[in-house]
Image 1 (tube, one colour):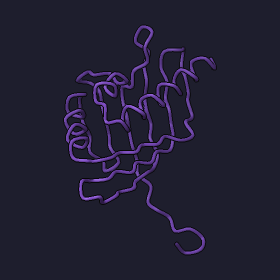
Image 2 (cartoon, rainbow, N blue to C red):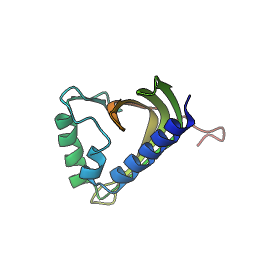
Image 3 (cartoon, rainbow, N blue to C red):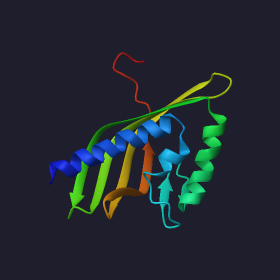
Length: 139
């Protein structure tokens, strides 16, 4: 596996997360394949078919929420023939609505990326929530 490609994909994930946290739709969009065949599956099981459907939902979330904080940890990256990659990682999203109410969710995410010319684009995302498991002290 080419370590240069791995670093490139790690940089993409970091920059994508920063654009999301800044609620910068234009920058965030640049990391994705904005095609009608794009597929996004969120942690509730909602499926957005096509970039436009996902962008509409995301735009509403960005307008409604005062703050978002997405983290992506421990990415495991598999690259195939230097033109297709799958990333499996842990995710956590903390959101704050206008009333100050905070929501904290997390789980696993899978990103499928394809190289289009010199650029990598995310062509499919799948988020899965993990139920909170009480720690050993009962909390």
